[in-house]
Length: 217
View 1 (cartoon, rainbow, N blue to C red):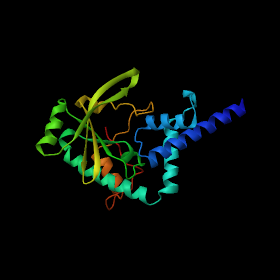
View 2: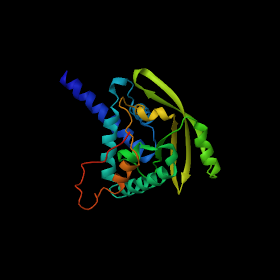
View 3: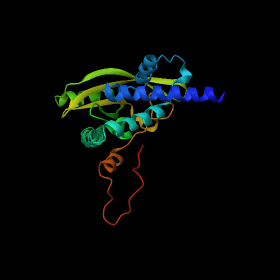
View 4: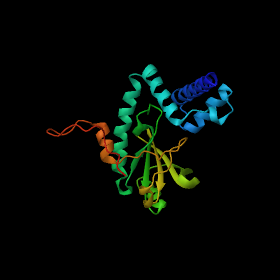
């Protein structure tokens, strides 16, 4: 039993490392897709043998420390600055940062991913069109607890060479984050103040340094 358990752990480790390689080297942005490709490449067919999202994130972080010790932190910093600019631009829609840029594993291929909120999704489209910003549109599926799922509009465009990815929710969506892709935890989301603290973590003079930024709702 112990040998079998050790073997299972080894398989999961290999799948996680292969998924991390696909994300890092081939730009596979979807953790679910990366896991499927990694499992197929390694001949792993049993769902129970797949690692958790957290295992892939850990493997990705280790890979970036080994192979991108300078470029990844630089790319992350530039994208967090771009996220702040995008959040200022979309301030009327109460933007929240999600994904790789918030969680710290963004690289030069990563998009700045924002959740924006308005009860009329077309208002976001008109906002872009009135400012002459071309975009691509699709429908994106989000999962919630209790096996509930919703399709929401998703928009993608570039600003200053950085891809910006918007998912549009009704205002009530501020109260409940969807589940992360490839996991069962609610997505971590951050308001502008929390992102600004990531860009410049130094506290004002005379104030103690906080352990970490508040994510906000």
